[in-house]
Length: 112
Length: 109
Image (tube, rainbow over all chains, first blue to last red; front, side):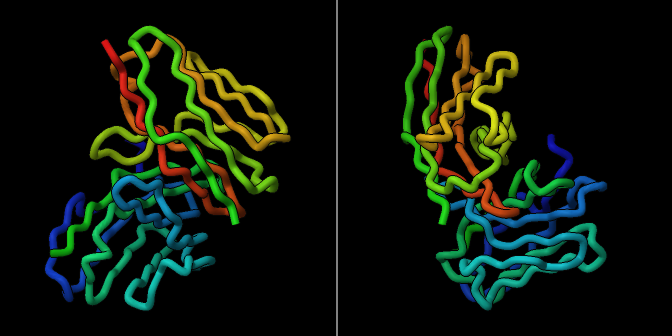
């Protein structure tokens, strides 16, 4: 257990529905990252926050995706109008320094 | 951009040493990582090495870095059944981490 928690651990949804995931980082870490991992691949960077500021977004993050970290603590990742191609493991990581990132257990999304 | 390549599978007999190899492309990467992922679990940071080092040892793990060839390896001594997992090589680019596709380590009895 790294101290990073994610909720829910599993989510099954129908195509077109909206889903929201939550990540609670290690409390003293000001940096929070979202990655996506599909089957047989390594994690791919989506976006990251330093405190409440979203500093970078990958081109993988389409307009249907939005992430927030309103108080610089927990973060949410919302996917609107889900598509089957969104099925993946969504991983959150937190860091104090940026170079040492600790990952949560992930949220596995299945879009039917 | 950064690209990280590693072989997809490795089979090793229990008790032998495992060596997982990786190459990366971005010479400006300052940190190189090895993460472990067990089935259904998140990623566990095993170890990392700063780019001005050529070796780091931590108990059964030895990381070797050849910066000139952009080659990284992870050696696991006395491989145990609990070492069965997917091992990801990774490199930093600015504040993000770029991962390889992972090497599945299979332990033979």
